Amino acid sequence: MQARLLLIALILATCHMPLFAQKKQSAAEKARTAVKADTTIHPQDSSAAELPRVVYQNQDTTIRKLLDSIQKVSDNERQNSTAIQGLMQGKQIDNRTKYELLKNNLINSSETYYYLNKKIIDLKSRTTTNNLDVFISSLNNPESKMLGFSFSERILDMVKTIVLEGKADRNDRNVKIVDATNSIINSPIFKSLTALTPPLGIANSVMTFFHSVSVNNKAINEKNLKKFEQELNKYVVYYTALNEGNQKFQYGLNFNKDQLNLLHQNMFDHLQFTASALGMALPKKADNKPLGVVLNEYFIQFNKESAEKFFAELEKKYTIPGTSKLDYEKLLRENMSLKEANNQLEDLVLQTKRFENLYNEYFTLLDTYYDKVNSALTIAQDNGLADKNIVKQKQDEFRSLKDEAVTDIRASINISELQHNTDNIKYRYKIF
Image 1 (cartoon, rainbow, N blue to C red):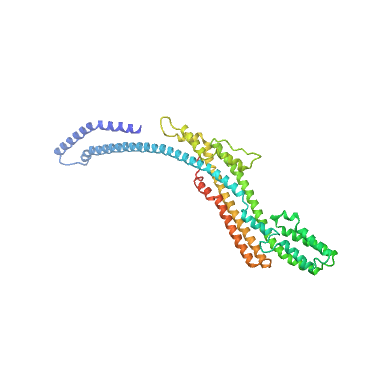
Image 2: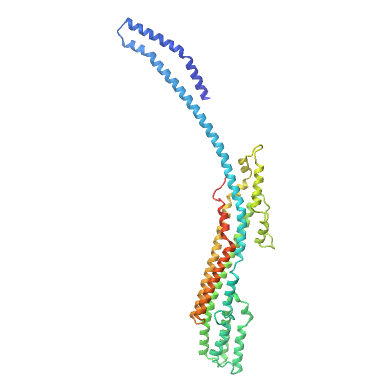
């Protein structure tokens, strides 16, 4: 509107220019006549002669200003038009970027749930490995001769040589003492406690028995009993160290599994939210099935392919008729749940990080367990229970089994598979 007013003003100014020119010429002729009639120029005459030139100059400046104003208005309109077009195009590009971001994030997350579930199940099922378990069980077995001696045989031998002073077969009383000791050693109670190092239970029971017998049996003197207890304590120290390693490992392992169970439940809850946003049937718990089994069955229908199919159908629905373009603004506006699902993916990524921590903690437990068992073997050597060469051989064997166990577990769980998938989720970008 302003441009039109300025244009009209310019036209009116132009229309008056011929009349102005005539007036200018007449004034000039009168001035020249006045000069010829009177060569003396008076101040007031000079002023009158210059007046038309001043009017002309002012009029010329006004026209230029009008033209400049019109040009500025035209330039502003052109710039505004370009800016508006740019904003409209930018808004469309921004909506497309938002859609592509949440689409790729949610498709990748469908695989993340699968990998995380699989690896939680695998890590929960781990204790150590079969070979490593056999090695530890043999060390705890009082009948085993892994270190060149059997604890059961050593106890009987010390009873005969130290407590009974080599007179185990001299009378019925001594024979009964040997039989009673043998009965304690072979008690089914201790055989059922392999994980808790039964030699400790045997040692305590045997000492309690001899303290009771020594009260009424004068043949068992206090000096021999004390020496027997000192020798027995050398084995007790070894088995105690072994037992502490076992207990700490089992405690740490149980805590690790509890944390994995909690993580599994949190993953299940998060999965339900995302599945709902993608229009998928939700997984349902079953009292007679472990959570891992339920999710394994669910991932047959909820996977990367089903997520890709969902977005393909969504894009078809929001394609502008007669074109191949999507109405991204409408798509995002009418599917707010997708935005929410995308914005909650940070929680899923944090769950994968939590799994990595528990995964690394498991190997820390295994390293600590190895150190404890290795230290117990050293005690057996220092206390003279086993030959140095045998102990060194078993320590090397144990280290090899431990390294093998670590390699097998890492290969089985393959944590990098989960890490690479998680890296594809751009969870730090929120959509509003």
